[in-house]
Length: 322
Ligand code: ADP
Ligand code: MG
Image (tube, rainbow, N blue to C red; front, side):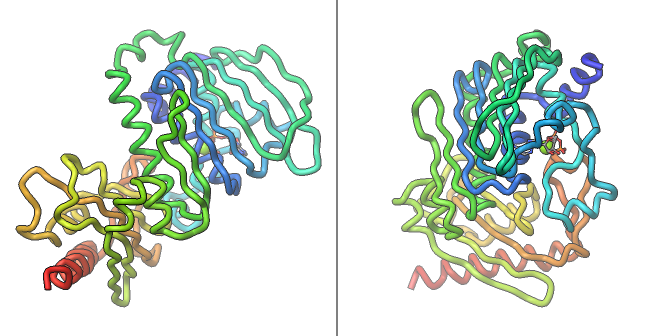
């Protein structure tokens, strides 16, 4: 079983940022309004996610660490119909098989549970008094899978992966207050007050957020809203383009290109804007493609959507030039 979990871990848990993503998505699923993430050594030494969500009932904690025990998605369309981000019941068992994990969790008005697992083996489990919510601490990631450790790139790269993922998650959940702290340095802090511009400020800083321009466009199929930087505020990578479709961030080449095309010749070659584009679409127009965790989605009428985005950006920039 542990071996199976380790093999599954190879697919789900490729690097520290995958652990962060899975743990944070679980916290979101649990209706948390505040999620704090503490990292050491780019996540290899320690990843701790503290949430104030629903918690796990004491007797269900072992189940949460059992493979597929919690799988709850039946067709891939469900992914966009239901709110829940979890669907495979694989993340926790996978993580626990390649690290040292402790969990402290409690549901409202009940005694909580503490459990410590090392390399997939439960080493300690006992009742625990704690506040409602869940704290999961993952230490010494890949300590027992040296082959996996070899794939880890520089600590700097791993940290920026974590940062990128957290930026995008925070931007797609302006209703949740996030904090990301790496060895005492706060990398991100959002207010969770459902204000997208303030969320952008928490992610990219107040200066940048203040100078960004709002965009808006819609037709019968799509509603587009967001914030874009002016052509004088650019970055050398596409990591600052965030597309959020029905509340989930997605990767989509054509829509990234639509953003860039909206700037036309105003962007220097090799430079990219900062942009957060939120899209509302009927889920009938969407099809989750390949592996859902890869954030790839097939969108019917994608060209129409791309044009909406490009036009909205071009219009705002034209306005700005006057
Ligand atoms: P999945 O999210 O695909 O169901 P996971 O392995 O990520 O599988 O999590 C297993 C289960 O543990 C979840 O379905 C959920 O019931 C529970 N769980 C995990 N993390 C949390 C959390 N932070 N708060 C409440 N429940 C959680
Ligand atoms: Mg999950």
